[in-house]
Image 1 (tube, rainbow, N blue to C red):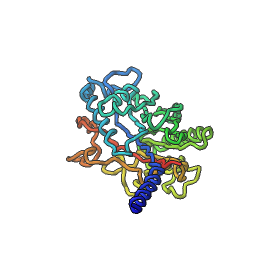
Image 2 (cartoon, rainbow, N blue to C red; image 1 turned 90 degrees about the vertical axis):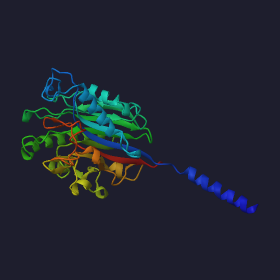
Image 3 (tube, one colour; image 1 turned 135 degrees about the horizontal axis):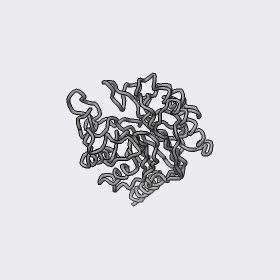
Image 4 (tube, helix red, strand yellow; image 1 turned 30 degrees about the vertical axis):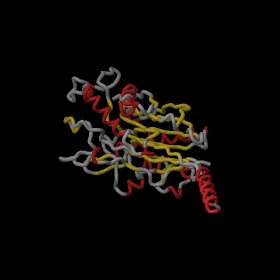
Length: 342
């Protein structure tokens, strides 16, 4: 009898200890350049003629629906806690195409919400964000114009989104970017991306002055790599989370860049163009924190070409003029945040 009572007492104590331990909460963050997500309708205000039924690409409803289903498959295929609760997108034509994406069967049941603004990009491509309202609550949002008038060029706006986490009720500032391309050569086009970096830094700093304790997450296709001047110097980033200062951003993708990994393949060389950056608040061991080494690239075989000249390159929608019925010419990048409770 005494042994039974003792065992029951031990079991009760263990159960109490276990129940008092709080399970960690996770938040997935991701970015995906979806490569020319265009509808089939002519917009007279933009140069979208390449993606119309009468164009050389013969872009039609079937191809558009295949594109939507392919992208939905990618977004819903993340495992467990890595499923994105905040997903930045670029190369979307308008709000309607993202709404169509969210309405696909794989995504519809997740009930993501959308943040989007039309930019003045001549081709009509924008950035956007979708988020999980069970994890994040929208406070306010807006866009910041990047002034490239000295280059006689117009580029995509920077999207900023201020949110509150459902767990912990903490402020988050998200920034979604798609910086000017390398068209014309890396060196000649670099000043445009430097201007975009300066604009982003000024925007981030101004919003942080209003919310100094906010967790900052910057995502985007920067068309530069972690060690290029625009990202490393102008944004003041570091690849070492152990020595980060409160003025810096930690580049989650630096570790992979150092290993010659990348999210985009150009002439056989992988480039780490798609990146995720965070501030020191997400590295201080309090409340929400970055899970070390969780920054990754989705590079499963089914996302890549299986054979031919471009074997193991991202399986894109078109290879030149040839319709490949693929996903995107970029691979998604993602990272994980964790909140362990008080």
